[in-house]
Length: 196
Image 1 (tube, one colour):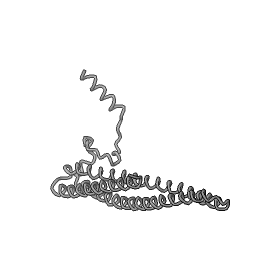
Image 2 (cartoon, helix red, strand yellow; image 1 turned 180 degrees about the vertical axis):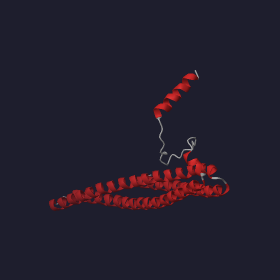
Image 3 (tube, one colour; image 1 turned 30 degrees about the vertical axis):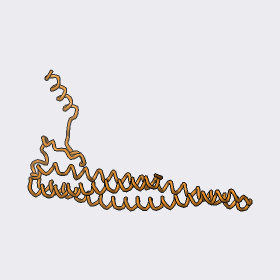
Image 4 (cartoon, one colour; image 1 turned 180 degrees about the horizontal axis):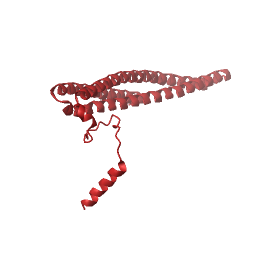
């Protein structure tokens, strides 16, 4: 198998994985909505995790596709320079009457053009994939934001300042609390020493 076949298989594999990820995210959203209707806000918090995980995976997938697109465009730029050099050498060989060098240059030029055509199509496919991922990511983030807002709206008002609330959402900024970390560390050390 040549490099074109390998990249086609790789792109097909990535497309299938992305479709599975999208379906899993949609299912997580559906499950979230079903369970949210049947539960209280505190019980629904655990549903945000899978949705946020889906967003993170899609962000990673978008970054990978964008990086691959950059690499393909860079390779195309290099091949374009090679093609210019090849054509210049062909003209020089024609002027010098060197038929053998002209033939070699034309064969190499044909290979470069074929390779560039394949890379052009690959770049277009990657650009389309980036656009699709951006659209999906935007929708996923909107749904996640709505889910968080729904949970926040259903949360009891007195839980907002509860210092014992240990629920942590790793995708949000930490609450603004005046915490004396030195005092907490000293307390932890005292507890560890007293248990010995």
